[in-house]
Structures are given as structure tokens and as C-alpha cells.
Length: 328
Image (cartoon, rainbow, N blue to C red; front, side, top):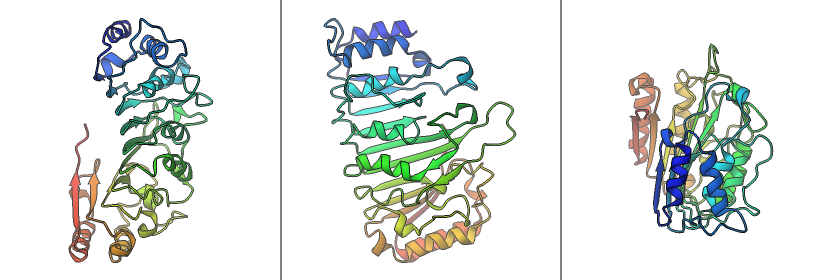
């Protein structure tokens, strides 16, 4: 399939949109070689297209299998990163495996993805994420999936959610980014009885410098930690970017043993209330607050929490939504 896709792409110089699902992107070594030759090498091969019209790219790799590091050291980075050298690309959706050692671009120089406006990245962790964002200075929309599994652990993939590193990574796009969605999950290694423990490091002011941001969607722990005992937590008014219009918090990571928000309703309400009571000072453009459940059902949340949030919204004059999103 890899050879077929590579041959087909090499014959489509005017291609504007590319979507490869899991069946077509399962292997990409040959496609990566072709893209590197066409886009990254100084002496470009004249018989290969430069894909000057290609604007929208989705390469949906299957998730990494259990214990894949035992069987191969091959990572897909060299096959995927050439996409950022596409001269007209505006939107990229893909999975990028973390580098085994130092992050390296496949070309002599990093790309200049000045037209890239929307990026959806899976697997790549904080640190390497910053290397990618450093070449996307015009980015307006970012969806990023934080992921950890014990058998994938290496220099980049650790059980620490490094908030300071995430803030440093996002600083590359703070002047343009208007929409940020962060999802997060851990997964069970083979025969593991429960999800691996993860911890936070750094300041919970991760998003406060994103002054252009209008829409923020993050797991509750990225703002408040896993419990009221989490150190370094600041008030939401201090943690949020000033110009935000919609804040969506999610139940991602609720299967962690560290998660205590199912029982700490009073603390959670106080945290939101302290912000909403003075939202015009902290976030004067605020329009709404959303509690989004991906794992819980809406009725699983404490009724006191649901009613309390709705009452706060009515008192503050902003929209409050408590909804469930079905997993795809």
C-alpha cells in the first residue's frame, strides 16, 4: 500500500487536498522518502512534483501498538515532518512519533510554514512540540493530544506533564493563536491493572500569556491539578488569558487514580465562582463556560455541581453548558 500511495502522489502535481486514513498510512517509509526528495533536499529531483497547490493534509496513522519499542526503533518523524515543507499548506492533521533522541528536521534548514493556520497533532509531546510550533508563526488553531503509556517511555515520553515546557512551546504562536484544544490520555500497557500515574510540574499559568486566544478547551487538571492538594495552583482569573471568550474544561484523565474531582464538588465550585464573580476584570470578553464530558455521563457529575454552575452562569450573565461528547 505504501508503494501504491507513493506512486499515486508522485503523479498528482496539482493536488489540493490529501486525506490518508489508517489503512493507507499504516506504512509510510516510501512516501516519506519521496516527500523528502521532493521537498527537503537542496537538489530537488525535477521529475517529482513540489505540490505547490496542496493546502489541506490529513495523514491518520494508527495508534502505536503495545511494546512497539521492543520490535523496532523506526519512528515516523522523518516521514511526516516533510509535510511542513509544503509551500502552500494551510492545514495539517497527523500523528508524529516522538524522536528517539534529538528532534531533527529532515531538511538542511527548518521549514517556513508561514501559511499554516490549523494544526492537529497527536502523540508528539511537550518539548518536541515547541520545535514544530517554532516554524508555524502564523498558526491560528491548534489541537494537541497529550499521551502517555509506560512502554513508550523514553527521553521525550515521560509520566510528567510539564506545564512550564508547554507554556514555552505555546509561546512561539502566542501572537496569532486564537483557538487551542488540548486533549489528554494515558493508556494501559499490557496486563497493567490500572492507568499509570502522572504528575504535574511547573506553574498552572500555562495559558495566561496567550493574549490572542478566544477559545480554550483543556482537561480540568491542566488548570486545577488532580485535587485541591495540588501545589502551584493559581486562581482561574490568574491562569486564563485575558481575551478569552469561551472556556471549555473536560473530564480527560478522569480515569486516573489521582483524579479527585468526582468528590470535591465544593472546591471545584469555589474555584469557578472566584473567577466568575469578577470575570469582567479578569476576562472581560468572556461569553461562556462549558463543562464537556467525554467519559462521564452528564448525570454522573454531582447534581450540586451541575446546579451550582448553572446558577453562577445566570448570576454572571454568561452562558453555561454541561454537555457530553461522544467519542469517535
